[in-house]
Length: 266
Length: 323
Image 1 (cartoon, rainbow over the protein chains, first blue to last red):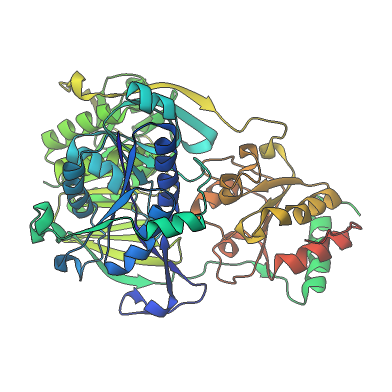
Image 2 (spheres, rainbow over the protein chains, first blue to last red; image 1 turned 180 degrees about the vertical axis):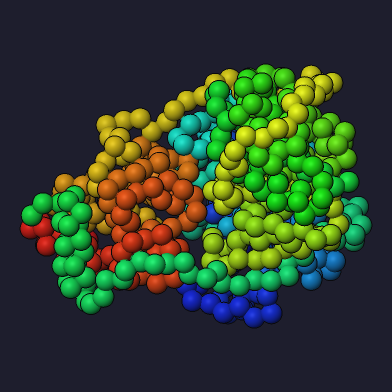
């Protein structure tokens, strides 16, 4: 069985930042493995550990810098990785779900996985569309926002029995035929920290670079119908009454508020 | 090529609130395109739902009878058929959990550019959508030159449509391909039952990422003891396994309406706010003066919880543990 895990290196913004020319200035960005993808990697590695012959392949669309991030997936137990990048992608912001789905579809066709695990969304742009669009593109079944997966049913019966986390504390129980794409919600498992041994082993695992040519893709696949034309800090709508002073003065005033509202005695 | 199609959402016998917000957003777009607003109901008690959705601004309601509950394969097929029949310019869907399960698929299938989680839309021959990025730290403007378009909207951003409409209600027949329905909903389960019902609490002390480590939780527990409050949390605390699911406030957790909600080290992501904005009084403690939680707070303390909380415990005669 083969598991393909899509991972994305995402930019995290520091508490204070500046926007210029419709972008957050590079100095205020830190790059990391997308949180949702971390759970997807863990779910893949758990399938690998539970099964006899399960290969976990991580795939990312990203420039050379993102090798550091995808190597984290290798350190946590993925067997090898594929990194797609192309000159045609240099000046795009990859907001177009269709473009990402088309690129990943070419990797799916080459790798022929039984199951694809993808984070529900990326922490930066939060489109939440790539996994499900990919499934449609390659003709796989799918389930979005999965917070439990029956590992044995996947390995023994070729069915993904999942729970989908709906709103309001309700879960939907669904059986999905394989091959399938599952988009993984945070909290489905406890992502491991990479061990020193894992980090060492990851150094010798393969990260195969793929350009569009290698995947039979035309440069036009990078074309985006969506254009990001402006970025700004939302105006604060706060009409909160701020309690000033040092911590002890703040606590005294806060205690008064709580007494006044009648929720605390004493 | 100017009509707007919105697809309603229902679950376990009830329309979800976002369905009426879709009508409002859909009407806005239809006014801009000069077309009609069509609203579709797929599955469940379609006639009852269609009657409820017949509010001001809806021109045409379409019912598709198939199954009781949401199934993405059914929704994709029904939406594809109806969108094609109408030759519409806009497909408007909810950015709900079920929306996430079929909106990207139908957009991809129809080759529509897809803008998700929109909080604002404008159309004047091309689409301009507003959406947030980087965990609500910034807003962005996205332009899409050529339609037809697929847009999913964030719940709670548009007011619910009201009034009584005079839309035609008609059944739309879809020739379903049964072989393409390859997922099967086997049931639902309520989670988060347990010893405590946080939705009943009068005073909630709620903790978020700012607590940093599980080892620091006793500090908050001491505050809860000293004030006779009930402990709740934002999602990351439950994801980390530090508190059980029945303590989680937010979109996927519980909706709470206490007299006082004291949010400690919670940034105020939109999913969290959805669960607690109904509190009578909201007090927030956060180191970041720009944290979105202050946008909805009545009282704010910009400060370090590791200083403020021990002082507050002492105010109520408790002992703050060393953490």
